[in-house]
Amino acid sequence: MILYILMKDFIHHLLFPRESNNHRAKILHHDSLIVIICLFLFVTSLFAAVSKTSPDVLGISFNITSSDLLAMTNQKRQENGLGPLSMNDQLASAADQKANHMFANNYWAHIAPDGTTPWFFIKNSGYEYLYAGENLARGFTSSIDVINAWMTSPTHRENMLSKNYSDVGFAIKEGSLTGSDTVLVVEELGSKYAGQNQAQNTVQPTASPTPIVLAVISSAPSPTSVPTPTTQTLTPTPKQQENINVAAVQNKPLIDSKSVSNKIALGFLILLISILIIDAVIIERKKIVRVVAHNLDHVIFLIIMIIVIIIISRGIIL
Amino acid sequence: MKEHTKKHLWYYVSFLAVELTGLGLIFYLADKNLQFLTVCFMASFYIGWAILHHYHHHNISIKIMIEYILIGLLGVVVSFLVFQQI
Image 1 (cartoon, rainbow over the protein chains, first blue to last red):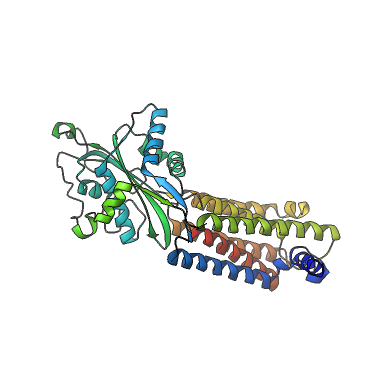
Image 2 (spheres, each protein chain N blue to C red):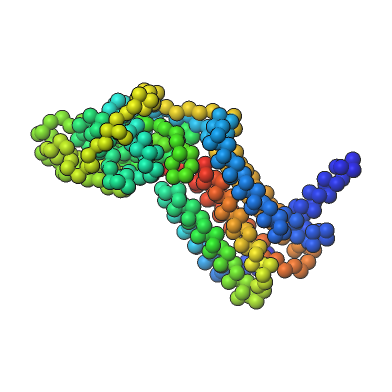
């Protein structure tokens, strides 16, 4: 009973303004805020360390398969009166090579820092394309989220719903990219080069850094601008080949770090906003004069941070 | 709180304009590092804006400045936890 009273008293001291905390919730005092900041830094470091050493215990839970991605893409195409895309092993191999290249060279872009374009991987896989395109996604945990994100972006949507493409290949890979563990989804789209006559009406290859990556080959089958392939990095190893065949990434760790970190961040911000509002209301009613910052400012800023977290936790497309 | 809001409306309008622009940038940027830099800028702007706001109304103090810095830093640190998972 005494313990209960003490706990209740402590929680009131922590969350509500009263005499014992100088009429400002203790959690809003400078020392408490410093402790909370340190706690968040500690949790962030802990998550990074544990997910590296024990990914089965703490890691990102996801379930993305190329068959789901294909089915959903074709469903969207069907809804828009377009024919379905066929899964192509060569494009899947190109997507796999692209994903490996991104992880190996630590970049997130259609065109690598060394100038390697997506067309290089497509040609390297043996796919002679007339049209080719690429969509990228990272940080998503389900196939439907990836498709929805691509469909809401006009340029990615245009790629997915282009009548120029007949084939598609996916690579879904987990790895460390630009400082954090992530799930990378690469979609290579294309249609096969049918012959020289078909190519005469087309334009020279273009490599655009914009999300729409459309390439059309000329009568020359090998674009001269692409770098020479390096066998060491681009030839799929047996392990990579295995990934192509699986073409899916499914992971179910004991604790889903993405979901937990989102809940911690959003839960804490909502709690802090509630405390600030209650604090302002109580002080307003009691007409107590304090030398503190405006609670309204903090509330607006923290709501904006909640929106930031909602936006970034969706994942990123390119 | 209502009176306070009316009195300082233009400050809040300018603050919201910058912060909403930041949100728009985060939404459209495809680079995680640039997104995080935008969050840092938004937090820095918040601190600067708040200090200027209090300074113009002659009620600035070290204690108030530290509180804004800590809340701004807290916003960055909390968002960093989520950024680590993308």
